[in-house]
Image (cartoon, rainbow, N blue to C red; front, side):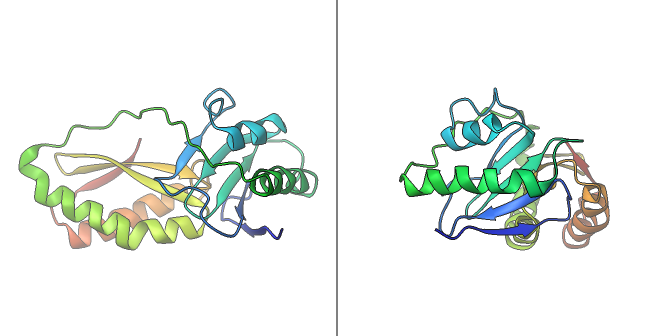
Length: 184
């Protein structure tokens, strides 16, 4: 079985492409072994040690190694082995999710929220996913869009620049009611 890997802008995160659909639902991120307990693949990856974060997205799995841990030369073959074994055994990519708190949108802003969500889905998410991450809409209130960065984007040195210079500028350009974008 051939699993491709790609580097991401975050030097601590690698993107693993198992060749097919890894997760048909919205990407799920696990920030620690406890959060991954009910998700077999994520649990197995955290069991390797030196894993700080796991994102299971539509067509890839992004793994972030712990700060100051072993280099990718040692960890990458172990991650590949876990993912290959999972796929070869035909195990499902079952995802157990913790509910995230969101900002309640004002019903009067429904058209604005729809525009924001459409831009996120059509223009922003594909670019972020290409780098091994994901971005999740968390709310719109008084001109401020709240977003959560996941996967390689979470903790990436360039995530603030991506958020402010890229995403905020794009949303402000197409949706004049947006005044700011914040990470939550």
